Amino acid sequence: MANTFVKIASTTVGSGGSSAITFSSIPNTYTDLVIKISGRTSTSGNTDTITLSLNGSSSNISGQLLFYNSNAGGALNASTSVSGQEGGFINGATSTSSTFSNVEIYFTNYASTSNPKRFSVDSTQENNATGTNAMYMGFFAELWNPGSQVAISSITLTPSASFVQYSTATLYGISNS
Amino acid sequence: MPATYEPIATTTLTSPAASISFSSIPQTYTDLFMVANLRSSDPRSGGQSVNLRLNGDSGTNYSKTGVYGSSTSVGSFRQTNAGVIELSCTMNGTAAGVFAQNRVNIMNYSNANVFKTVLYRVDTEIYASGEIALYRSTSAITSITLTEPSSLNWVTGCSVTLYGIKAA
Image 1 (spheres, rainbow over the protein chains, first blue to last red):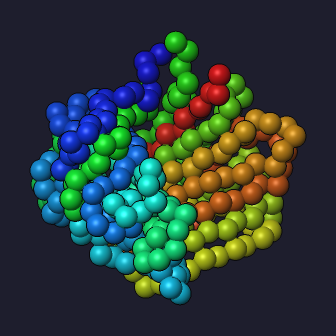
Image 2 (tube, rainbow over the protein chains, first blue to last red; image 1 turned 90 degrees about the horizontal axis):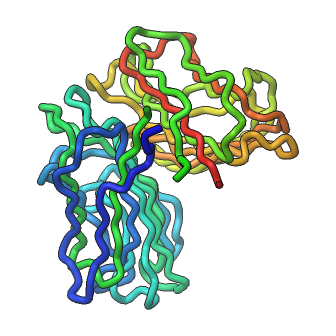
């Protein structure tokens, strides 16, 4: 039986950091895509966000965000503002050292040329600390609808500053047959 | 290398259907993972719940807890002695080609000594949630059924895949 869950590409950030991580020339032979991220950025503060671009653009992405953060009186919140954070939350430079976020992004039917693309993001930024934005957790429900439907062929993850060394991102293809 | 993550079955509707089911689920895996992309024939816009039942059990043998955020509210819920686990679908008045995404994990599904726990994410573009459910039965899971709560249909294009995951 053909492999169902296949690594397409993987990036580990080196000592110089990286302003973005891009997966390009994504084959359209799978059913779904999954990106798994362990990340930290050089952005000042406990928490940074990841902008996600599909086929070179972060336009035409809408969604619903459910999140919890540790700020004073922290509570569960909802927002439809996903712009600039389509790829989730990530540890920033002043978060507890050696601490990296976990993010999973799941695209269903990414290669469809007739339908908009649904994707979800599960994102955690835990810090074992107090203070502003010491912890962020989020569930994102998002939709890419560019009008003229095409397969997703490239995905770019961009923090506010740079991914730091030891950040990793892996793209997997999942086949349903 | 033996396969660890295998598709058990896929249903992609080429015509409307009242339900989508997987039966005679092999008991040779450790965990199950299901991805369900669903749209109802309900003519309204927005999201709608989906009835998920295990082993055809419609008794009040389910309980569930979750957190959710929508375009109008945010909160948590808990329900005991429920007759169903609820996922989500997009209704047919929503923009064309848009389906809800549901990802469902059932760990240890074939173990005859434990009740079954379900961990799932439910997403439409106006609703995001993380939920858990308990199915109070030690029976192995042999079937999964998805039905529309108003007895309407799933539309053409709905796709659901059941995967088996082996620990060794």
